[in-house]
Amino acid sequence: MSAITAPTDTRPPGAPAPAGQADKPAGKAGKAGMSTMKKVLLGLGGSYLLGLVFFIAVFGFKPHKSLQVLHNTFTPTDEFKLSTWFSAGPIDFNKGVLYVLIAAVLTLWILFYVAKRLKQRPGRLQTAVEMFYGLTESMTNDSLHDNKLQKKYFPLIATLFIFILVSNMIGYIPLPIDTLEKFKVFGAHIPSFQIYAADTNVAFPLILSLLVFCLFTWERLKAQHGPIGFLKSLMPSGITGPIKPLIFVIEILSYFLRLISLTVRLWANLLAGHMLIAFMGGELGVLVGDPWVQWLLLPIGLAIFAFEAVLIAGLQAFIFSILTAIYLGDAVSSH
Image (cartoon, rainbow, N blue to C red; front, side, top):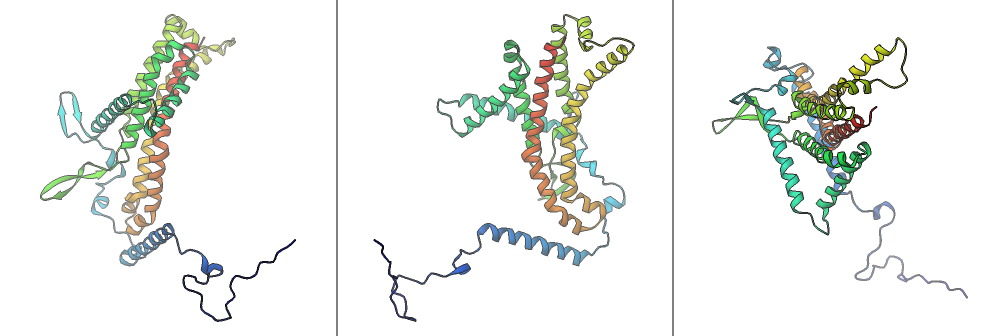
């Protein structure tokens, strides 16, 4: 049995629709209007293009270098200079020391805060902490096969991870620390806002690397029963003949290169990232003397800033931590 559905609208042509009912628009007219996100993006894009046209129309393409550039008193490396604010004994207090202290305080606060709020039913924060714990435990156990060493060095590896991550993250928060450039507020000279990371000063990653280097050297000395066994363990097995002294020298150099690689990897990546942000965020426009260049490159600077803050800050902390675990594991397993 079949049934044919009759049309529900039996109005004669041209008759108005009953109250409460409206003709449905057909085709594209029935689609919803432009979304808020599209409006925002179009607005930002339009403002960007208008700003570019404005700067070109007002300043043109001729360079308008600042007096600082003309007199060679400004260089892109100025933001990484450590001017001493005051001294406390042998310590010169500057923005590098300030950032290290902030990172240390925040690291301790995070560790104690999380430890006091562990619950049977974890919330979002505890879930994230447990994921971090599992990640750190996994890379520690994969590199250190001795249970005693795992328990001994897990707190160090986890703390290094958090400490470097916190230090990297606060490096993307603009703070009034540029004492070379100041502005006036009610007659007071306030340091200019600036982003700065302690890692961009090579002394900071060098100290951390020295700590790790000394630890895995000590573990290797213990595992090989003294300096003689230590030196013998550096030579790969099966090497004979006149090439043996050359291989031994190469192995000695490669061992000490671990200290340099740990230091330079962390330092160079953060330094390069901050310099790229500064260049694309305005410094290149100052150097070439065209304000429109600053406006043109601003979106690129913002994109690099987001990339560095979201990915590079955590990635470099992870790499330093996992290399620490690998070097410690290699120290006790090499023969």
